[in-house]
Image (cartoon, rainbow, N blue to C red):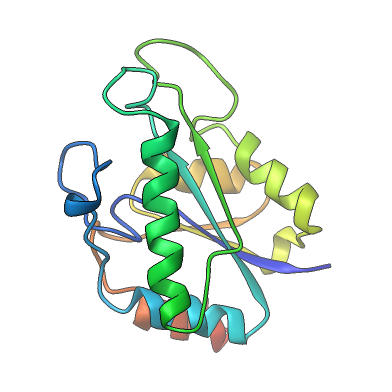
Length: 164
């Protein structure tokens, strides 16, 4: 079985701005993200983004906008010698519909676990909201909450060194 690091996107990978991030000019990557992703990959983790993108259902942006930012992120990471293994996102908004994929529900994490044969006990979800932790812990993955826009490098080192 494999191990994985699940990451929320807005606030963890890129700067949380207090409004929807869907344009490349407002997509500002947080410090050391390329180093963090590379470090996890070097230590045998799949790196998977699991993100709520409710602005799609609200009509503020669309799937193409999300894919553009995901591709921009992976291009930046590839230039640094690393990459994200997969991106999962929920296009629904809790004000408009109920679904199983919007965190704190766990369907997106469950899909990744099945697809990549993930050992839940050796995997982590890092998010900036309690719903990220709830989604992870529902399926037996350790959830870690961080302040929005944090530098993840110290946390990554703790995980790699078995301190968490």
